[in-house]
Length: 60
Image (cartoon, rainbow, N blue to C red):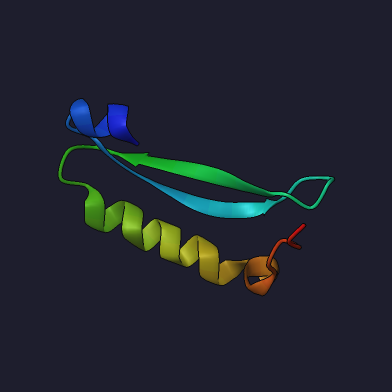
């Protein structure tokens, strides 16, 4: 999200599942300048809508 911040935009990374090896993968949401509230609401709504959100990757 650093490059977005330098451009004056906002962004957030949220977990969006696991790959075939069980490793976590992420999703980046990007919004306009001063759009933090919107992307935070979107990220929260997404995380609340997925059933796997309580799953944790196994540690080696």
